[in-house]
Image (cartoon, rainbow, N blue to C red; front, side, top):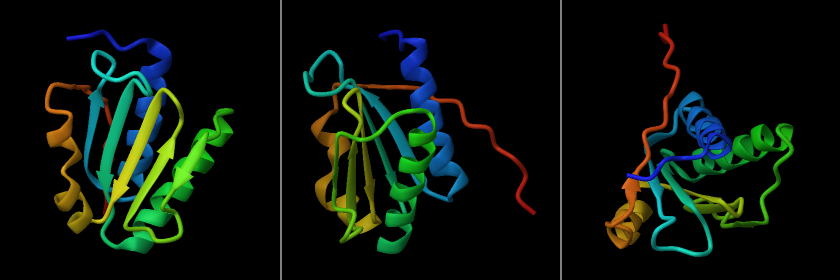
Length: 125
């Protein structure tokens, strides 16, 4: 298992926390450094419907922009069934459930390590 540098861990935590806070689900973070050259990590998550995925993508961009990070590329924002946010070292894939099932990115990257990203869970009343 590879050690995640602190700066990457912080960014991954921000991404996963934002997805959780905005009611995204089925989030997984994969360390693809040993097998990919274009990025270090994939974060894959779901929203309920296209509008939810679009909202997740917008919120992630706002949160990361506040930290001085802007995506180098965004794809699928208009359709909302699969949005890709490319931050170079981290690529975020946000899907509606049917699209995630169809493309099964986790299966393409089976050899990747799963990164344990801590999430602060608060009681929702």
